[in-house]
Image (cartoon, rainbow, N blue to C red; front, side, top):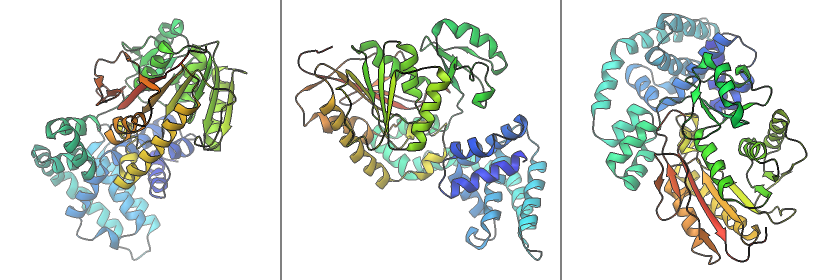
Length: 443
């Protein structure tokens, strides 16, 4: 499979509701590295500013998108993104490949292949100046269009943070991101940096186990990955786990929404005495977490349970709980841009109801004297401070603990927690708050 075909396959999966990262893991694993890199780059630049590409298609194409085949529309959207964004790939090669793709898929009498050719050449000539005019506008809606953020999100951020800060967050949310890695042992970090020199690896100044790359390689291609010596993890996520470990007491930990086990694996590798119970609603994510623990070489110190965290009961009351709650992922949109085009105000409201339910459940099952860390990879206050404030308003047995994330860009939440904005290529937007349950400590 060629990279361009792989990108189109992933985009078709995304249109059907699959996450881009999931589709890329499945679609691109069997193609050669150079083609894999091209496909991933095309998918990323397409999703990053999808709203703008659709706007340009409507402006420069004489036929409404609804009158064209789905294959042609996908080729046009990918083509617009590619000819305007890819720096090291000849636009003419991309245009010719997409025209041939449409010609092969279309009926013999179809005029859609010449249309693709004409639209993409017009875009190359006229769109750059048009985009610069949009970027120069001070209107928040134009900034959102130019940088690839849904309009309703920009309006929400303008209301919450003010127009100036909202503009900055819009640009941060669409900035280039790079992979960061967690060394399983801090003592191994220097050796891993040397082994990953091809990716311009360097030491993180935020965590003692962090490594920064100036690349986004396929994880199995990274030296040390197969042996469990390192794990892809953002610095925000690393900081959250390190924060929890710096203030917790006792060995019994619960990960209420474990996902693929990245934070749980971090805990188990950093704390040889830890006993972890991990919950998740998805059987596929439970299996992925168990594979992750096997890769890391962690044995017999964890228990996984598949089910609804709102109704499961732990084997024993935990000393510490990490609740990385399901959220909009708005802090990760630079890294996972398809998420912003799925998000809706109604969806965020639904998530906040779930978050409040899960945080309340965590407070109930926590051992007296234990701590619970609530975190999200969101920069919406509704999912962060508002959730924490709502749950704490109904309890008098919880007290917030002060924390230090080690991240210079951290800012105090209102009224609870710490907010991290995606200030560097290795940081996601994140929210962290830690509460302690009052009463006699029973560790």
